[in-house]
Image 1 (cartoon, rainbow, N blue to C red):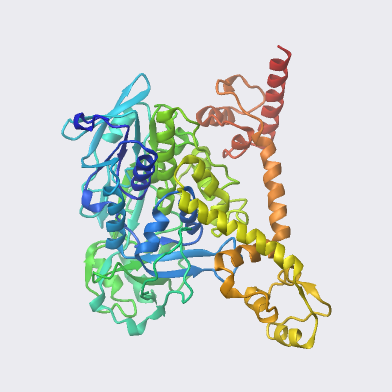
Image 2: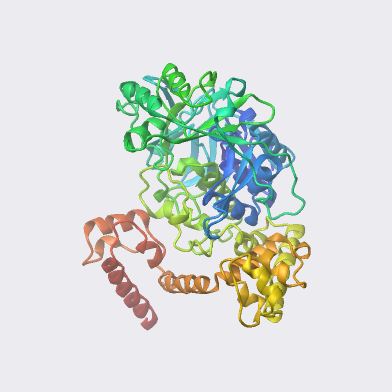
Length: 629
C-alpha cells in the first residue's frame, strides 16, 4: 500500500457516526483507509442531542454491536445516564437510552480510530470524485490533491452544500461553527446522480448555572443497569439526572407572534424537515390544541456547563429564542450559550443505491447516513457499518452483505430507503417493521452475531461469550420444563401477592406464561431458581421466549410466507417498458428502483398487488421457457 503517494484501498468521506463505523469496519477487515473530514477535532460529534438509543434506535445500536460495530461499545463507555424506556410494556417496544458525555464519546471514538494502523486521518474537504468507465478510482480535495482508491464511502451528514438559518439570516455551514462541504454535489450530478434537499435543526444550549432545577421534575437513571454491547465487563459509572419542564400559554404566544421571522414559515427553506422531530414553532402550529409540550433538560457532559434543551428545536431569531426560553419554568434567567438553528443540506435519494448501499450508477461508490435521507446517529452508524463492510467485500469480489427485513431493523431501514420514495428525513420506528416482535433489542446477538462472525468482525472472545450465553439459554429452557411447582398453601400465599393462584401443580415453564409472573416470583417459590446463578440476559431471553411463544411462532410463519415472494428473482436485464397490463407509473417506478425480487417489488410505493400477480406470471413463464430451452 503506497499511502505516501495518496494511494488507499478505501476513502471514507466524513467522520460522523456513519463515517466512523465505515472506516473502522473496513480497517479491521484489513483495508487501508483514508478518513477525510472537514475537522479532525469533530470526529463522532453529537451536533444534536447528546444521547444514544431510544425507541427502535436502541435495537439498531444492539444490532451494530452484534455485527461487530463500535457504537454500542462507545455508548457504554461514556454514558452519564442509562434508562430503559417502556419497561412496563412488551419486549418489542422496550428501548434503552444512554445520555452520553459528548466530549468523552468523541475522545473514545477517536482513540479507536487512531489506534488502528490501517486508518489514515486527513482534514480535507473532498470536492470531486474520480470515475473511469463507470467505476470509482479516487477523489480530489479542495486543494486539488488527488487520492486514489478502488472504493469510496460518502458519509457527509448535513455538510453537503449546508446552509444554516437563524431567523431570516442564513450562512453557509453544515453545523454551527463548521464550514459546509462544496463541490461534491456538483461532482455527483456530473456523474448522473440525483441530488435533493432536506432540512433538520437543533435546540439551543444553555448555561446550567442559570437554571433553577427546583421548578422542574427530576428524571433519574435506572438503578438496575442495562448496556448496549454484548461484550462483558462493561463499566459501572455514576449517573446524573435529566429534568423535565413544559411550555405554556406565554411560550406559545411569543412563538405565534414571531412566525413572520421563521425561515420555514416564510418559505426560505425548501427542504422538508423531520416529521417525527419537528421544531417547537412547528409543534405549536400543528398541534395548536395542546396547551403545553414536554421539554427535557439534558446535560451535555461532566466537563461542561452546557445543557441541551430537548424538544425546543427552532429556527427563530436568537433574541426571540431567549424570550421563548425564559417563559419555561426554571429557565426564567437562562443564559443561552449557543442558539438553536435549522440547516438545509443536499442528500442523495437512496433509491439510486442497491441494498448493499453501493451506487447503481458508479461501481465502488457507497453512501451511508444522512446523505441517504435519514435522521439520527443510530441510523447513520448502521448504514456506515454496512457500507464499510460492503466496500471491503467489493474490493475482494466477495458477496455483498444485504440484510433482510426479517433479520433486522438494519435490513428494514435499508430496504425502506432503497425501495421507497422518502420525502422527509427517515427515522427508524418500531412500527416500520412488520416483524418487530422477532426483531427485539434483547435478541440482536442471536440474529446477527453469526453474520458478524462470518464477515470477520466478531473476534474469538466475543463469539465465545455469544456461544456461552446461548448454551445457558437452551439449558434453562430445558430445566424449567422439568421443574414442577406444587399447588400448596405456601406457594399460593406467595402467588397471592402478585394476584395469582394455582389449583394444581404445574411446570415452571407453564407458570411463567402468566402475565404477572416473572423470574423474581419464580425464585420466591422455587428454591432451584436462584437469580444470582442466572445472568439477567439469560433470564430475560427465556422469559420472553416462554411468554410470547404463540406470538413468536405466528410471526415466524409470516416470515416464511413473505419468503415465498423472495424466491421469485427478477432478472437484472428485465425490460419493464415491454410489460403489458401494468400502468406506466408502475413501469417507471420498477425501472427506477429495479427490485431484485417480487418481495422487494411489492414494497415499492404505488405498486399494486395486481401488478405483482402479473410479474409473477411473467417470471414463471420466463423460468419455464428457460427450462425448456
